[in-house]
Image 1 (cartoon, one colour):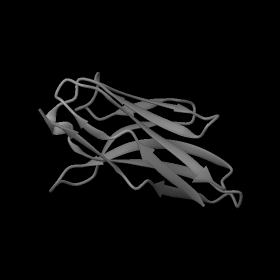
Image 2 (cartoon, rainbow, N blue to C red; image 1 turned 90 degrees about the horizontal axis):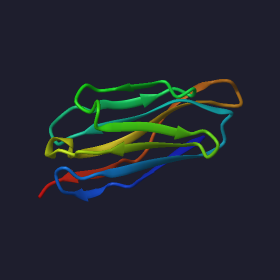
Image 3 (cartoon, rainbow, N blue to C red; image 1 turned 120 degrees about the horizontal axis):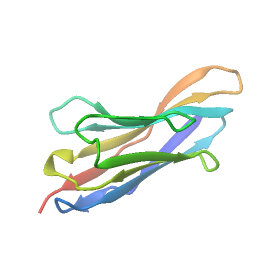
Image 4 (cartoon, one colour; image 1 turned 45 degrees about the horizontal axis):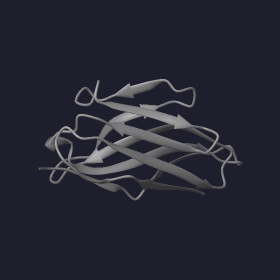
Length: 120
């Protein structure tokens, strides 16, 4: 089983920056694609950014040029650097990962979420 633990959320003023981290632990053969999603109050969960194992990235249009996703495969961690934050970025941010188990099965795993609040 894979567990994902996010950290780095909090309160920040508009225009500020935050860095989210998501560390994977447990028993697995490999982590494949990883990503960050967010869910604002009253809205559906949406993809923010994703990254393949070889570090190919994809971003939602709303965060392009402001957010950067990266990963360190040596420590099974994915990061989301968020700059020029806007009030509309306020949401619970969830980490997601696809893992390959030792049984060769693919599994999707979610973290518990971390709250990001952008407000003056």
